[in-house]
Image (cartoon, rainbow, N blue to C red; front, side, top):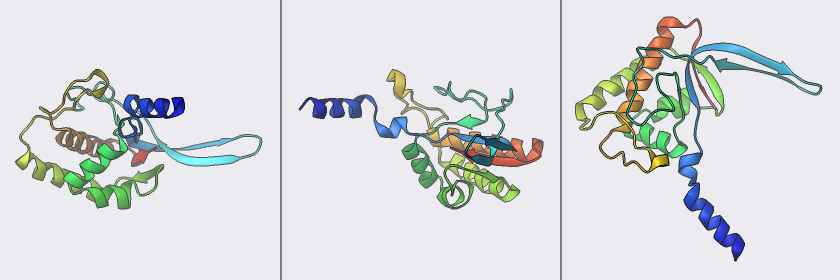
Length: 169
């Protein structure tokens, strides 16, 4: 009985849709390799970056003006459905998880088009709730915030990076 009580309490204190998340970074991809006594490993990573020009949003202190976001799995899925970007992300840019994919101009154009379309129907300012501090976010639009962030960093990567890419872990 005690085990059941602990399990139920853990679901309340640590709900999976808020603790399990992607780490998404957009910017310059560089090769990474390592080896140890038993194994060789090679992959691509995206360098962390910040920009004074990057968009920032209410209750988004974790991202600030950086090129990394950490949406919950369910939050990202809802975002992709609401903005019609599911195919772009789940069948192309984030088909492999974890993974790193080069960003092409047509990827940016699809996100930019989604942003322009969404702006026509948005009724709230971009921003988020703060679930860690029990701050309601119903007066903000997280989908608009994510679209603005993607639009900025994809364009930034295409304009400023030798190997523009998106990495998810």
